[in-house]
Image (cartoon, rainbow, N blue to C red):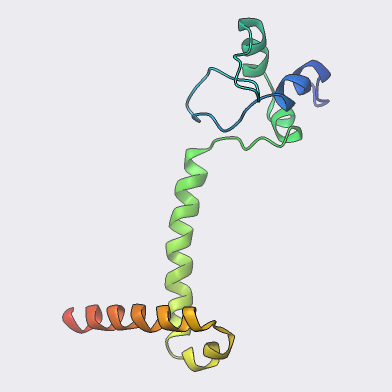
Amino acid sequence: MPNSTPRPHVMALLFDMNFKGPADSLVFRRLDGRLFTEEEQAIIRGATAEELQAAGAHVHNPEARAEAEAAVLKLAELLFKYVIPHRKVLIPFMTHEDMLEYGRLETIVTAGADTEG
């Protein structure tokens, strides 16, 4: 059974780790840019998901990213169905810049819809 309590020595390393490096790299650096020792690198690689979460680390998950990108498109398509027929209700909530951008994008979408067929 895995240990569910974060280990203090692991947490100390994770709190000093720069998580902004390449997601696919297994070479870890401290916040000041220095490399961890080989022993520290091994300890970090053995950190549990709970320890990473406790340290506030975002665990890289390519499937979740692809799912999120697909959801953005689906959400836009869903909202689009309601925005077009009810756009006059939305205008009072828009800034001037957003109204201009909305008009520009609406013109492009409408022109593209007219050419399909």
